[in-house]
Length: 385
Ligand SMILES: N[C@@H](CCC(=O)N[C@@H](CS)C(=O)NCC(=O)O)C(=O)O
Image (cartoon, rainbow, N blue to C red; front, top):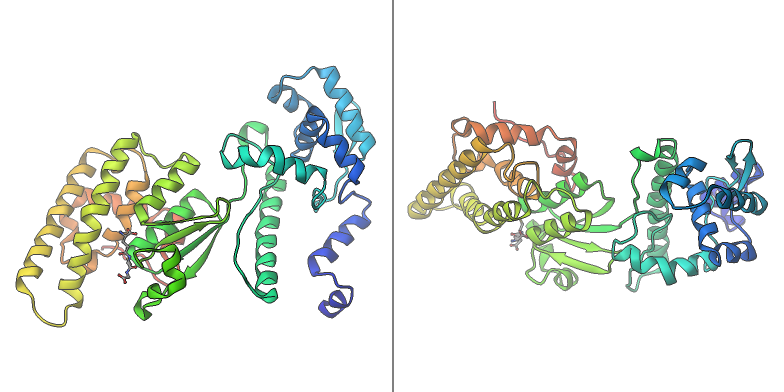
């Protein structure tokens, strides 16, 4: 079959699309039809609404539009072949599942000219498409590989949106596809970001940077990580990279307006405590209590005592509050992977009962379980008895 596709210079995806088309549904509009939509904003919005399975009443409640005008717009969409009008303002969608706007066609040009800037500024709440921009010089084979991967994520997204289109409007929210590359390793700082990406439900591509083999010192990595450390993300949509796990968490929380706890500044307080104290101090504890091949009694005592002190600070806070900033936030996401190394930290975990309760609660979150083993090495979350 693959050979056949090769001969026909079509990939499997195109084959599936053409089979779909045999059912008589349209896969794309003509240049003129798209131009008609692009020139008429209400008609374009009506088209987007039907593609998102809005019912007639849903469009009326979402947009200030006269029912008669909407009936006329629906009639035009019927003439364009996008829908088949049925009695009582119902309709049957006539486009195939693989329907897409024409490449460089009037709608794509309209999106780029009018919609994309609002999408990037996050002023737009609902869009049918997303636009990706990335640069680099790669071989044809690499380019092909990435196109296939992006297509498959894009198709997954469309399938999910298709399935969710059956839900009532109140249970749906506008969403675009944001592509993120994560450069990471299986360490507490790396896990903060894979857990966060899982919590935010963002698709991301993992690039393992093996710090045990000094891969963080490679010149290509230095270009996106001036301090030669993981984690780093590259946001392809915005064409920018971000280093420092705290900054990445703030970026994601700002972008998606989520996981800010009960109070933004309280979340920042606890996030800063993690970045300035918990991470650096516990990191030294790992060195002196676990990895130092020699003996360094002064350093061992100092970092063991500091670790116990910080456990006490967290335990006290968590005796007053369910999570560090009231509700679950990026401060918890930053702190938890460090506590998940408790076995290296010379502490008696059960004597910090509130911290233990918090630790177990977060460990039970599916996103945390998925994000913990990134890059996949079969790592298990340690669970105190
Ligand atoms: N403050 C940085 C610390 C990052 C960091 O220390 N990363 C470690 C792994 S957890 C690393 O890349 N180490 C490699 C090295 O130091 O050469 C952050 O939070 O992102």
